[in-house]
Length: 231
Image 1: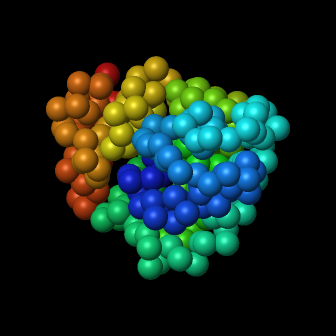
Image 2: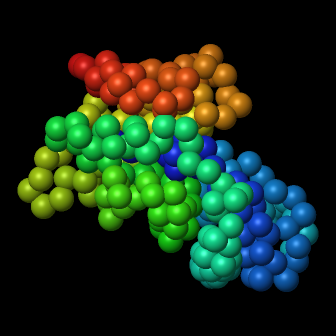
């Protein structure tokens, strides 16, 4: 079971936007005037778009990307204490994670556009990390699209001589259209949650096998998972 983090399990947008601006200015010396949507993007992808949209002379290459990601983790770490006041766990997130953890032969982790350090800090701030195996998660610390992260997670979840999860046995929970498309490409069954502004029609059109109003009913989530993965 793969979970998108932002606006699926939690909302840390206000703190994250401040960290992006801080990190970008540290690395480029220029203010981050024009933001971009984080939906479906990794932090690596966002850095290159920040450079394209904002007036900076810094060359967006591997070196500047590494410096940006390091600065971003530091900038977020300095603001993590603001999360209780400026962020929140999404309704039902903890209960749904706990319910799925009780399902037999199920491993839970995340596929996040954020770096490993930032995503872990967010989850810990709201007590959601205990249900997840973050050692096999996919994170925006590497410059790969989310579809590639999903494929990588399936390989790591098997381990040495472990169970190899098929595409039909791999589920992604998200509220994002780009993430739904990434799941289809990366080999996972997408289940959508209406936690953002995206409509049910758009999520189904993108390929969502099931659509839930929210995570407040863990039984409905598990039923959706069973339906979506029943070959």
